[in-house]
Length: 640
Image (cartoon, rainbow, N blue to C red; front, side, top):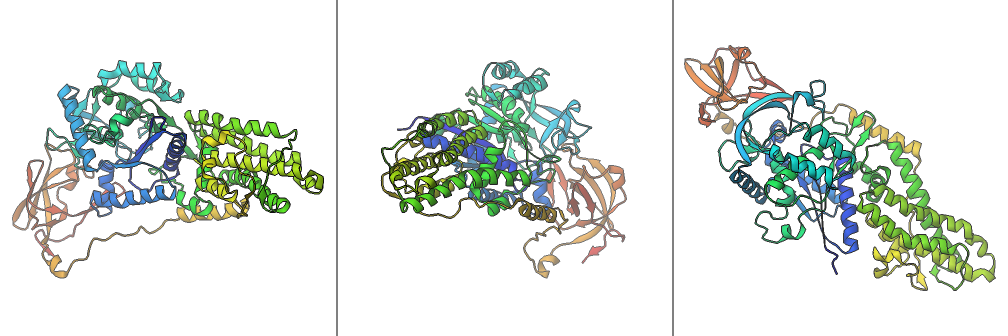
């Protein structure tokens, strides 16, 4: 019988490049929580996905010579492959390019507009393209983006605003007087740094690029990332139509897991949008800490990433999941080093758990011919072992409900260590030498087997493969493998046959392994030639269709409706041409006049934001730099 529903989400990740161990950290935590809740009998909805619109995606795709969706399909496939390798048990994967999501976001926009919570105006501010974030002058750090440390640009454009300021008082009450945001240390930051400073209305549309969901009430505007992306948590459930009933069943979310850098968006902007829609806010947003490398935050923008695929191949998915959930307190930052990883795997998995299982199986085979049997004999050490075993489940559940995964595992490991101590206390190798103590020996080995069964059930949400191997080795019946069965002692059947298994976690030679891992890092840091992606081949006849000409720029004006565009007047031999080009951010107007450029002269004219463009000039961009393709030869000269 179901205990009710439970809805948990990760952020939807930005697929501008491969995901790293920081994203894996969040997703593994959500997966563990989802697995525990399913094991407890809840009907779970676990959702993750990708945030696929915005200027950064457009630029990355353009630099690779791909259309945005073509580029995204490739990266999203890699993300899903990673989650497959990590065995992430998500129930729904949402992409913001999914048609149902785009239509739902447009309906949300129209609903807010009809209510009067969206209005038109102009936005001017400092914008960081990699982070897709606007900042005020006071928020900048040394004049640069406070999140990634990169340059910001002054942006001014026509936009639609959401009346965020209207919900300031309700947001303050939500944060200060409820448990909506956890850990509590994040609350003061949101209240003092943002709400009490006074909330500005939020720009929710852009006109300087077109990769996004079109604003449904005006052509030329696209819906900006935060209204688009944040809405995924309800559109993924079927909002607003809710044809399958999932929105009514699962909303409000029990917990949104987010990194601390996006707490602001999830605890100020997102609840305000929901308030405006007259929908309930999530029950909890948990802003976890960062995994840091020595020198700072792991970041795709900074390029200092740790690839989880390498760690999975080397140590196994269970070991990586265990390390991430055990090593770091979920609400705090933690530092990742190869040495920390290896020492944790050795101490907890090889020494504690692995040793307990291998010693017990070896003794059952050596002393009992591989068979478990119980007896009426009780020793002075039994009860404390049994008591701790049956109490651990409830303790762990409370930890996990509070997203305290590290201490939850520590509580399980207290029982692992207690079981190892029980071996030392009872000394089965001495009992085996005395035929009169066979019953006592049988009792000890049975108690150890039962302890391992309970441990195996408790670690199953964290380490499902390890758990299954242990259950199979001890031939534990299906009903005795459940989460609930871990609060009972004595479920292993009499005369159960125990199978020998390979060492669960071989001990690692730390010095040797560090040399190997550091070698991988050094190779990764060497400058590699970038893999070239070429478009489909064409024939010489296809190329001959292009009319490429040298042209001279004789005048330049800004486009009246788009800051990114310039209107160029070109001299092409004896003919004048007008070309609209998206090069405004790369060049000053005066430096363009007199330049020789390459013109695609037979491109069909089009209107760009209302102004006709009679061709296209050729350019190359990389790392925010642009070069115009040119030749020092008379204008009008054909290129062949």
